[in-house]
Image (cartoon, rainbow, N blue to C red; front, side, top):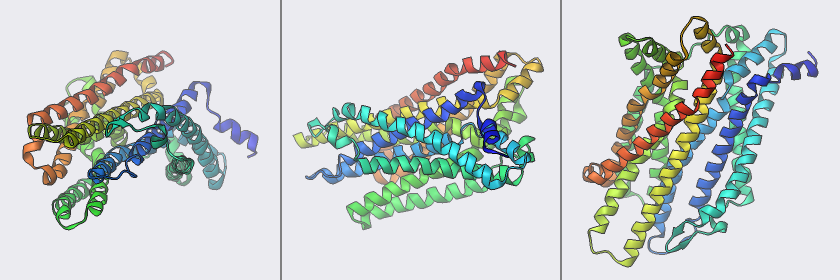
Length: 440
């Protein structure tokens, strides 16, 4: 098959070009946020003084709490419109194109899409840096030079995004290269095993023990590195066990379903628990961070009730500023994640929507089922993530600060805002669903 035919087959149809735009937007948002978060954290590394190690410790923890979920979002961005791509590539395999040719074609496409988004993200970081530089710490603004990353660091993040896209493309190609007919007929099932829960419970237990023991035996720098690593590991574990939890929950809802939308919502989740988790994974991360923010607020209130020096008051103000910035970053992450994933799912499920339309199911029923498939797992996700975070924070601050009124109110407010963002995203993507029905 010559290059001209290959190019025509890989070229998206006019109605599918918006599917290409979605991962570009996702990669742009991810790159902007990653560069901005790392740039903000780097401004603390060169500080000296009595509280400098504390600033650096809090910056490292905030960096982990934000960058790990953002990298997860980056991996999800690389998988957007995978079904459309898999179907086109499986067509090439059925037409006789070699596995090597399919691999080169899809990796090149994924890297080009990621490069376009990452380049926009770099421009976004440079545009946001002056605004981030106005944020005051230790009584004065950080400054543009302190928060903008050097060219080598920007290049490293840029190449990291491209590498992530390439790896995701190669992993996604395995079933196309092995069984192109299976992809065309949609016989590949998405399964998650209960062993994920065992790994998750073990990881959280190990992290709890290390957090309880290590601060008393390790130095400050080592303790900071270990704590940041443990938080990152638990966040990764949440992504591992989340799909299994949603599968179990949806299975129970399926058995109790009494209305068409409830039945359809449960089937949507069970069809791909991993895709369902990606819809609400941002809430899991926001809920996880809400516990840290809540205990931080409670700790600041305790500090405010004592006779504090001017330096202590300045430190408390800076910690409060850092909490606000971290929460804003988490909300941006949630908005980017659920918005792009919902739009992508509506576009990738056009065939399902067309079939439901031909069966006579009204748009309102499908829309309610879609929203229920997203909103129903939210409570389980938010509560479970908050409990995991509370287990990790308990050895550091104790149960009194975790259950303090200020802490509980902060956690509830953060989770409520996150759920509100998800709900708004479901409303914003309804026009896409309407257009899918109109073209059915």
